[in-house]
Structures are given as structure tokens and as C-alpha cells.
Length: 496
Image (cartoon, rainbow, N blue to C red; front, side):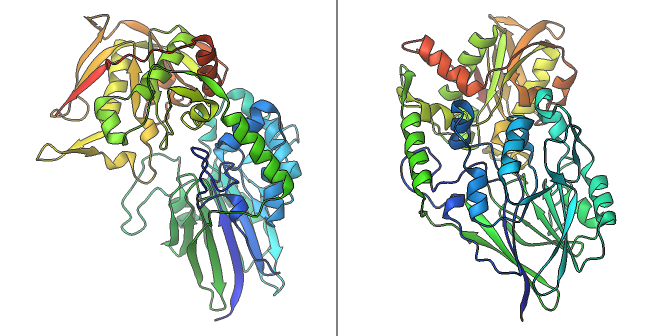
């Protein structure tokens, strides 16, 4: 059958333009600059957000003031429409505005309003193809941006309920032949069975399909590789992160959507400017940053969670010195480069990949124990006492970053106990911590919002904030300590 509409879709590219993840100098099959989208008058190229933050490239541009190449790369690939992702707010509205004003594509985001008029946002649009097909498009972002983002980065911006905003935007569109939703949010149910994957409204893709007449819903945020998904008559897709794949979607003349994940080559034809930027970036990444008493290389996530890891210990050392707190907790990203004993900037920004700052909360011993119990739920033990990762941390989105490692206390998990009562020891300076004892606890600003099922942190008083990116704090720590001694002992142990 003839194709009436072709859509090329990317999402959660996180500034990965080049065919590299920057953890090494080898080429890898990834990167927006490696993608090509053949276009004609019946083709749309669309992005689902989380575009301008999340890679060593975007961090380099942010801290050095170098112009970001993201919009230019998207312009040269013919993007027509984008929406905003939660991480696109991470560097503030001015940075976001520079990206959107440089972008040729229209930004559709019905549930974001800018009282100061800095951001060129539209709730929806109608695109008439060369064949006369009228395609209505509406963009929205998860409103959990309000929970995660720093207040100053949302100054003058309002992020409202995405479902209601999409409903209103659709009602305002003139009649269309096809309705497309661009949603920076994920899927809350297993599509094959209907089993609930989440009991929050962070991700509401299925609800959008149930309540709104979208024919095609382009989702993101969870980094799931999904083609040919369907829910209540709506075709659903999603891409993995970091520009590792894109999706090609077609609509045939019988009105049926078809979709397929497309691989990315490990090379790109770069312009002279793109080559120069990559050379400058690699020189900056390979600049010496400091020395450690030993290299810190990651193991698999389960092994690190069971036995501890010196990488998290090092992050906590930095956080304790920067904050002066009694206790610190730190998590690891899903993918961590690790550190050679001769540390480079590349080690730092490819191991601590988030644009987090720090907060110090006042917590009680009871709150601290609840946090540890939440972490102990990371483990699932079968009848043969084999330990694996609880699926809650793997589905629908891989979320190893919601397991925290603590410093400043000693603690122990007994995995033979039921979830919620696994903490069998909790001490500070060799003494049991009382439930009503008050302590200062340093954590990243993301965790302080309660994200990752740590909701009890939201009610804790904030004692102080450290408004410097953690990556920069790590670099400053290395400069201040000519040789960082990494202790061998662990702060906790786990029994099964």
C-alpha cells in the first residue's frame, strides 16, 4: 500500500550528537550527527525532548560558554516539530530560549506557559502534507518537572497538568485527518497485559490514549526501545536514550500505522565546525584533574549495591566536605565510566553525568531508616537465596540511580527479612541512632524532591543548599587534594 505519511522520531538524545558516548575515543553506533532523515512533502521529523542536557558535550558548552551545536544539528536534519523534556529546563529559561530561538522547528508544548514571553511555544499545530493530509499535532511534558526542577530554572514558567492541557489544545485545533501527540512522558501500564507499572502520574501515556483521540502517540522519558506499541487503538512508540536509535513511522492508505526502530551507524560526516568542536571538547575532557590512591572502576550494579563501591564512597567524600553535613547519600547513574588513578575531566563528567546540585536536609533517625529501607527494596531474594534486582528498578525504566549509598553512618541489611524491615543496624560513631535523633543529610537536589519513592524527604526542613554542580564540586575537590586517599572499608554490609 502507498504511504500517506512518514514520521522520523527521536527523543531523549541528551546532547549526544557525535558517534561516541565520550567514555573512550572509539566510535560507537550513536549520535544525532550520524542520522539522516530522507524528506519529502509527506514527511515530518519530530523530537520528543530532553535534547540540550545530559552529555559531556552539553556540560562543556554550559561551563565554557561555547555555543551549543544542538539546534544547528537539528536544523540540518530538517526537524519540523519538537516538544520539551524535563531536562531541557536544567540550565534555566535563558539557555532554553537560546536553543528554541535558534531552532527552525516549532516547539509544541501545551502545558508550559511563559509569563515573560521568552520561549516561542505553541500548544499545537496543523501540518498539511503535500498530498493534502491534515496532521494535527499537540506537545506536552510530564508535570513532574515541578517536583524535580530548581525554582530559579522555572522562574516565570508554569508547567500545568499535561492531560488537561492536551485536551484543550486538541479542542482548539480545526478538523484534522490524523492526530499526533508528542509526549515527554512514559507508559504507566504493560501494553500486552494492562498490568500497572506505576502508581503515580509521572507517566500517563495510556491514560492519554484512553481519554484523548490521538491516532499516534510519540512518547519519551523512560528510554524504552518501543515500536509497534498499541493501546486502546492508539499507536505508541518510544526511543532509547542518547541517540542510539530512532524510529521510522509510516501511515498507509488504509489508515494503519507501522513503526520500526532504526539503528545508527558508528560514523558521521562532520562539517569543519563540528570537527573543531569535537577536537576542542576532547582536549578539555582529557585535561588532568587530579590523582586518586587507586583507580575506581565500576562493577555490575547488583554487585556494587551488595558489596559497596568506592565510586559512590568518593562522591560522598566530596559531598560531605562541600556540605559539612553529618551524613551523605549518593547514587550512581545507569552508566558510569569510572576513574583512573590519574583522573581526567572525562572521568568526572562521564561518571557523574547529571546537572545536580546539593541540598542538606534535617532528618530524624526514623527518616534515615525509612530511606535505607527504600534502598533495601532494591534486592529481590528467591527461595534458593539467590539475589537479583527487584523489577521495580528495571521496569518500565532502568533506574539504578534510585539506589543510594550512604556515608557518615554504618548500617546493615538482612535480606531474609520482609521488605520494609530489612535494616538490622543503623549507627553513627559506633552508637545506635535513635528514631527521634536529628541529623543533617546531604543529597542531590533531585533526591531531595522525593524522587525515586523517597517522598518522606519532601517534608524535611532544608538547612542549606550548595548551588554548584556536583561535577564541578568533584573537580574542585580534586584540585584541593593533590592525592585523594580512598579508604578500603565499607559503611555497610548485606546478609541474605
